[in-house]
Each structure stands twice: as structure tokens, then as C-alpha cells.
Image 1 (tube, rainbow, N blue to C red):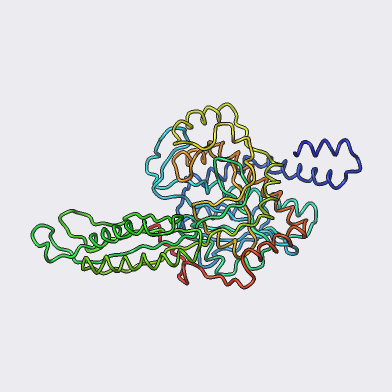
Image 2: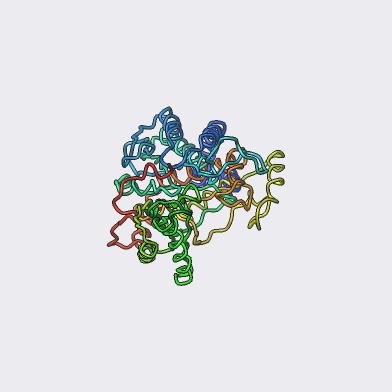
Length: 476
């Protein structure tokens, strides 16, 4: 599409608006390409740091340093979160926000090679590609900043540093604190095994740590004197697993026992289980959550222990905006997909057989998947942003086609050139989309009108995590 437009400009001298737009897009794409090494180095550093939610001290600092060097004004510590920030360039005109994530996943360890290979001493990894998300968004923001300066066009570009997406709901606290109240449009993206920009919603989500407290005693010589907190956890889990048959089919419930005792001959007086509950509708999550709490109370009563719980996070589903999604798709098709060199082809060929029933074939990283409206079964705090301000995003082929997120295969590609090339696709697409929105008031108005229609004029925001403070220690 982009090559055809350029050819049209050469053949039809009076096609000035089309030619000017094509030349402008060319310049933006060339600028992002010229910064490949810097963007790749930033992505690699974030991959090496692999800092988990609310502990992204080095990651946040490096991104802020990179943006400050480009003339952005930095406001740190948003919403009481030390690793959250906003970087702003421009003072007047439409405000376009770009989200940047950078937290890693605990318990995933993988080197940047196509076979299972652990890195000694590492306890977290970028298996969801948030190192790429952060670096690509920075690349896009810098490209837009240079465009604003060179053209003198009115407009403000903001990059939001949003920590703890993985179960910490960092963006929710920023929304609750009003950080997006004066933004016209928000853009984001995510690492993936495909190139796609459509309208994708997600599941609402709430989580909590349920803590059971009993009485310790010797498990053999004095069991009658004990009340096992672990019994409470196990009874709770059993009751919830029975509940699965009697919930709407789109529901997802999952848990891990985070503390269950230390020795078999000591009846544990403390045990903890960490639960997630998801459904496409926030109201249904609230209804099902009450049943979860009642099950916890029943399990505690039945085993003679006590229970309390702490809500850790909660996300609304993403509110789709087809006006913006279709525009983003046009920009992605203009940019195109990812081309592998011989080394990357060899990497992909070796990794691909380790994937379970991959949906996409090798070679599809060069393609742009067709537009559609999708329900995604994951959850994200982008959802709370999207019900505050019109929002859209894209997915770029940063991983070998067919790679699932939260896998060692995703972590491997996120640390090498396959991931970095996909990041460039995202950065170019975001930059072109942001510039289009800055220049096109009709598009902004149409997106806002759809946003109001889908959300409802009388909508009142309520965070699913309530009024709690950010759980800065939830990964400890």
C-alpha cells in the first residue's frame, strides 16, 4: 500500500495531499529505522533487568533517562507508585497518550536461545514481552516528538510509564488518580506471534490472597490440639472447584497455593492461596466474587480456622473502539510485517517444533492479519484506561509465529532480534497513528462519539479493586 501511494505521487503531480502524507509517513518510518540500535538496546536492557511488578526501579529509571535526553518533561511517582511516571513533550493542542509497560513475570527463566535453557540465579523473565512494549512505545513517542518539533504542528505527546500490569493493576491507580483526564486518545500495543490491529476486548478480572490462620501442634503426638490452616485452603479450593460447574461458561478461575506450611510433622497455623476470577462482564465478576468469599468463610468454619483476604488487583474489560482500531489497522498495513534474516530463520525453525499446536505458520510474521472483532481471554489494566478515554492498540510479531505469551519461547524471542524487529513494527505504527490523530480532528471526534455511545453517557467509573492503595509488595 505504501509503495503504491509513492508511485501514485510520482505519476500524478496534482495529487498533493496524498503525496504529502506519503512523504510524511516515509520520514517517520525512516526516523524509527534510524533508531533501531537504541530501541533494541533499551529492549535488551529491560530484558536483562526482568524486574517484577512495582519493583521496576532500574527499568523505570532507564526509560525516564532516555526520554529526558530527548527533551521530555518527566513527572515521577504517579498515584503513589515510585516506578510510575509520565513523560510529556508539547504544551498546546490535542493530547495523545502512549502506554509503556516494563514489568516481568516471576517464576519464568529463559535465555535468548531456541531451546529450553535457564539463566543461573534469575527468578523472573520477560515472557510477556513487556520489555519490548516499553522500548517500542518509547521509540514511537520520540518519533512523534521529533515530528512535532520539525513541523511546528500543535499537539502534545505523552508516554505513560505503567508498572505492574501483571497482576498489579498499575494503570488502575493512575486512572483513579486522574492521570488520563485531559487526554484525547490513548494508544498501546503488545508483543505477539502475529501482526494484527483489530477491535479486541478482554475479560474483567479480580484477584485476592486468601489467608487462613489456625493453631500449630505436633502432627503425630498432639494432632487434636491443632487446627490446620492448610486444611482451610484445601477445603476452600475443593469448594471452588465444585463451583466451576455452576458458573457462566466464559468464567475463568485459577489459583496457586503461595504458602502451605514448611514440614509435614508441623500442623501449619498459616496458609495462603492466591485467586484470580475472570469474566467478560465486570458486574458478573462482582457477583461471582461474593460466592468465592462465601466459600472461603464456609471452608474456614468447617475446618475450625479463621480466614481473611486482601484484594490485590481488579481490571475492567477493554472497551473497543472500532473507529480507532480500523485506523490503526491501516497504519499497520502501511508499515508491513517482519522479515527474518538467515540467523533468525534458523532460530525460528529450531524453536517452532517446541510449540503446542501453533495457530500460525512460520513465514506469517511477514503478513498482517485481517481486521476482526475479538474476545480475548486474558485481562489487562488497559481496560480501565479504555473506559476513561478512547483507546486502541495493536499486536506485532515479536515472537516466532504461534508462540503463546507467558512461555519460555516468548521470553527467548523477547531478548533477541526477532523481538526487536517486531518492536520496530509497533513503534512505526504507533507513531503514524499518533500523528494521524494529531492532524485529524474529525477522526478524534468520531472516536469520541463511538466511545460515549459504547460506554454510556451516564457511566460512573468504579475500580474493581476498590479504594485500596497500590500493593507495592505484592510480588515479595
